[in-house]
Image (cartoon, rainbow, N blue to C red):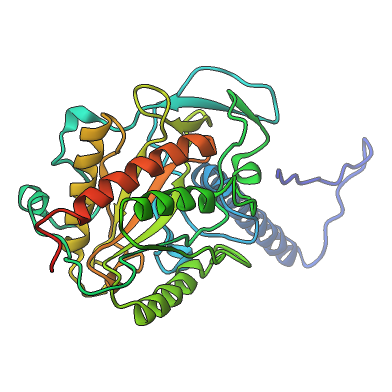
Length: 357
């Protein structure tokens, strides 16, 4: 918005009227000038602030329902949101018609960084070599061993794929249709684990209703109930999909080098937010899963993201947040990735070192 000041225009030849006493008129003019100057300064500051805020937040808003106002780091919800909508992908060059969001396919596994690399946003420096060989939580007794749930249950994929989207990602990549959202991908993961001999439960409660705000608090209570009822559970998978924009506003489709399977990323929390727990046990599982996945299919798993928030992972030393694909992937691409995850996780949990008689 622009502020304009209109000065009174006098007919030609007319003299300005001077109010008496003269000293009072002079003071009024000075005061008015001061007010105008202050108004212009405030207006300029507001315009700059709005512009800066728009540049920072607008790319994020398209990924969240209108009812939420979370900042990119999740501070709007106590710092509990995972690193969705990272704007770290390189920029493209293709202009698109108004109203469309272009899609670009990318491999963000960065194999040249090696299995020891972490996207580490904490002050800690974990010993990755030791964690890659650390024993995992052993099976004890009868009953279910794995729980799959979805904190952001309506996160969805693009059923028809394509090179662009008619609209904004936030409008098109949230859905209550289970075959299009993360529930369908979780069902595939559950199927594979059960087929491999690991009894698995799949919770399909919508934790992001009525809004995303408070979703982690709701899923926290859900996991507590499951763990109380099934103490045999040794692994919890909170399954999400990612959302990534390039600097040019392109929506990133995460694919392996063969272009057939959605990429996977594990998000591991820590105790930086004051929640004391053995977060390195969760990191050990994530590191071993990533290594196993990339041995099965090179470029399948992206580097692990080690974060300062806990994401409810304090509840169990085998709790992972998995991002399978992005909103630009198709459900089929994400389900192929889930099948790999199920096979790799079963191999880890059924290894002789982790099974007790």
